Length: 150
Picture 1: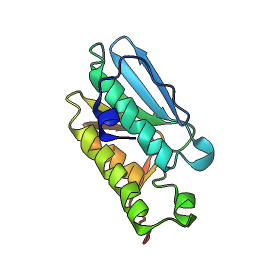
Picture 2: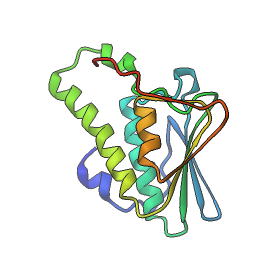
Picture 3: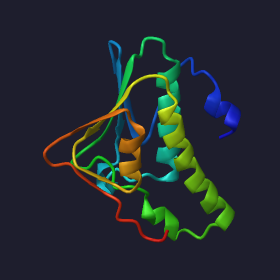
């Protein structure tokens, strides 16, 4: 996806494979919908999150954005299965850069973001929470940075 595509104003709703996107009145809810993978952040999921936040940013009817995860986990962080693939260091750099760009874009939306944390928020999932303006956590929520050298 080109930088132009990432920054263009989205006029029509985008269909997502790894997310649920819905708006009710002035509230948009973005749900990471990969419960079988603990809502891990693969390359496609990060790209879709960037698109979803861009869509909400440019929708004048949206006043607040809620981010949550499907199932019992908010987000377990990076999809480490993707790191088993043999890709160049340059490609791996851009995977990491995309996630960092997502966090930055979330902080610069100009609209309040709320993380509705329904379970574990680990590593990159914890980063998603940190990039939001407010977090509301269930009793089952756990936060952590169990980093490994990926």
